[in-house]
Amino acid sequence: MRVGIVGAGITGLALTHYLAAAGIDSVAFEASDEAGGVINTRHTDGKVLEAGPQRMRKTPGIEELATAAGIEDEFVEASEEQLFVYADGELGRAPLSTEEFFETDLLSWRGKLRLLAEPLTRPGMEQETARDLFVRKFGQEAYEKFIGPLYGGIYGSDPAEMPAAYALDSLMEREQEAGSFLQAFRKRVGSGQKSPPVSFRQGMQQLPNALAEVYSDRIEMETPVIDIAEKDGGYELTTSNGTEFVDHLVVTTPADVTAALLGNIVTGAEELDELRYNPLALVYLDADPDLEGFGYQVGYGEDLHTLGVSWNASMFDRDGVHTVFLGGMHEPELVERSDERLGEIAREEFEGVVGAEASVIDIARLDVGFPAWDQSWWTLEELETPEGIDLATNYTARMGVPSRVREASKIATKLEAQHESESPSPSAADGTPTRATGDD
Ligand SMILES: Cc1cc2nc3c(=O)[nH]c(=O)nc-3n(C[C@H](O)[C@H](O)[C@H](O)COP(=O)(O)OP(=O)(O)OC[C@H]3O[C@@H](n4cnc5c(N)ncnc54)[C@H](O)[C@@H]3O)c2cc1C
Image (cartoon, rainbow, N blue to C red; front, side, top):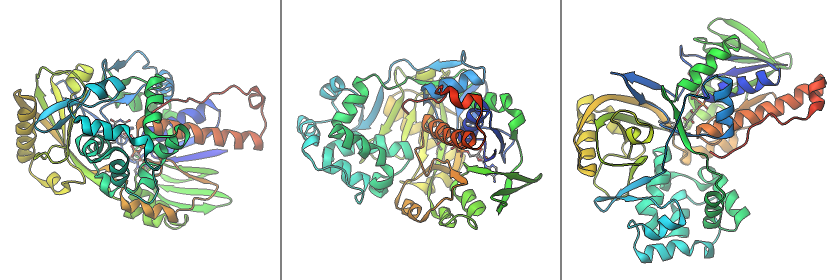
């Protein structure tokens, strides 16, 4: 069996690793001259600036990849997990444990009691929006003060536009298993299932770069796939370099690219072009505030453009770096403003919130930023992928880096079983689990 992978972001790279470990032939095509896709680290004036994910959880899958890439000693781990929300003119610690919940000033006692009544509310419903679900189950105050900003902040989206059916499907599954959202949350936090947040000494992209080097014989860089056609029970890929036949295809590209590549051969793929992404501007500031934690999201109702700020300096000792997120679903047009204006907005608002002076280091713009997971996701109802094609993407499954790795692992396991049933080998009988598990 020969597997073709379109894209060498973290999903394509992780799949390449798992297939290599299983002894399955594969080739990944990457359009860009760099691996990592959305994971994109810049180095400006000796500072590490992240234009994509700022951190990820060190799940067994991530550890396995780092070991395979030979950079297991390069992890940097964030110490104490403290997230803040800017609400009512001040920073308050977001309650991520039962103790923090009772101590937090973010909520009035009335708001706390309302939130605790969640197990008495009706279960989440697929037809409602994430906002309606959160307000119905936890109350308006908790939604506006931290649940909405923290949850919406993950996607740069507005939960009022996000259908629970897509945006909250795995949370609703956990609710069903545990009896309530709060119980599911307590179980997860109490069980110590959460892996620590990490990056690498040279930034997040160190992992994709190292993986691409280790598996360079399985990855064709700067080779975009231009066309895909069905042929002899498999697929013929036309790339900028020629044609290639594969038995199985795994597509990991952004939605518009997938629509163009699969539109003619997969039912409903053409409509993937309609999926919305939230554009973002990231402004990197140099500052030295007396604060410890991961950063803050801005509560709803505050008169600020800032969506949230990542405190890279505190998290991973990144030499004064703080990353301000602007734009998103709330203000997509803001991303079009000049560098000067964006820098000014980010700096002034940051100084106002944390009370420390800041200067602008650099600015990055992402026209295709976070997948919005909004009403346009209903178009996925039409999608029917055939046996020979897997879509492994952050708009058809969960977005976090560990989840991307986990999906790659699951697909590799499936293909391994298929491969072994076609050509039994001694390793097939061994039964040793090679796949990673963990949270995201
Ligand atoms: C701003 C931002 C912040 C985030 N923050 C976090 C975070 O803090 N923690 C976390 O865990 N997750 C975070 N995420 C989510 C996570 O980073 C992404 O979901 C994940 O990296 C996506 O990886 P992927 O490989 O599935 O897709 P991509 O990274 O999009 O990879 C797809 C690849 O396909 C290539 N490609 C495109 N067209 C073609 C073609 N025609 N032929 C061949 N190749 C092609 C692209 O160049 C790219 O390399 C964040 C995402 C964004 C956008």
